[in-house]
Length: 458
Image (cartoon, rainbow, N blue to C red; front, top):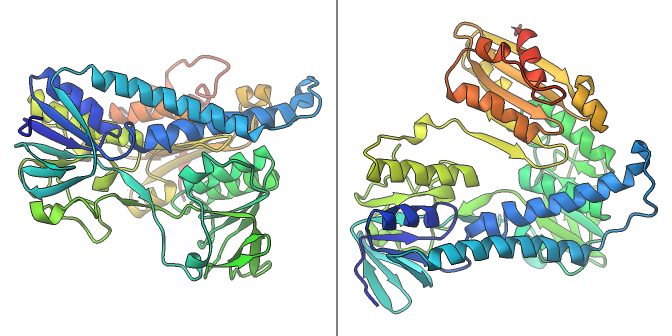
């Protein structure tokens, strides 16, 4: 095997294969190294299989509500093994498409194995040492396993484990009230599990505004999910039923006993076993590779893309990392991460679409602000669909008349938010969007109305 390449890419997640495609198309010889499965987190244990499960959970939920729409369905049951098979089949098909694409890529050598850097231009994989003047690190992250009392006495589950369970948990205790934890909590509740969420903070998804957080909590509790916040000291021990979780909350029972426990309290980058020290690549105290605004590390010729660089924790930000690096290297551009306006979604049902600043963050800037709200119960499309949970919210700068941020928690919120995201990317005053003529009946048609209702924040 040739061991000298024009470029080496470590990790075949979202950014890696696409970058390989651009580099090989430019005539470079490229080695793509992957120690696990092609596709990374998104395809194998993240977006693809989890959103397939979200779809199954939504189907079960809607079927149970069928009589609300004048439709009779009889008893609704969930074949959990069939749900798992469906999600895994979708993930497998997506992975296979990536593998086929890479296999047919001229100039690319795909190597399966564990990569360790041995210098600023060299990488050890299996029994070979590869070299290249350009190295791109795209190794992603994994669930954080915290140092919590008693955790070594039990067998916790992580997000990937829930995707391949053989049987439905009788009582799933979710430790962590943020995005991954909330999605799985609702999924498994709709499949028929009893679910308890344990969160150490005073409220769920604390990075969101309090009104959004409260609305999401009410939404989940209405489906029968128990929520325990202010869990100041979380601990674990074995129990006859499975796992006992000590919550030490200000109210409620001091322990929650479940059959299974999911740990969803954050992620850590896969950078601890790459030999970065040998290459002189710097990391921060959490393990994230330090990069500049063009995603270059402190070592010339080495870049870091995706979750491992701490500049974004989403598939779409990893993809944008690829776009930035490729544009700068191959197209003569000067693209920067600092120019990126990040949006994201929480894929509960209904979903939360978010972009830009929260109201709390906007207040901290000291600007004169305009804010507007509207409950989804006043949105025609939501009423017609019988899905009126949630709210819409926009915060804007009163002087520049630019939208600073928005949240749409409600049916179609993950799609409707893009109208606002695009306007913010275009750096246009909100008056432009206010005079658009959206299609009726849609969720997006309420955005101009929201903008008309902008009022000064006291």
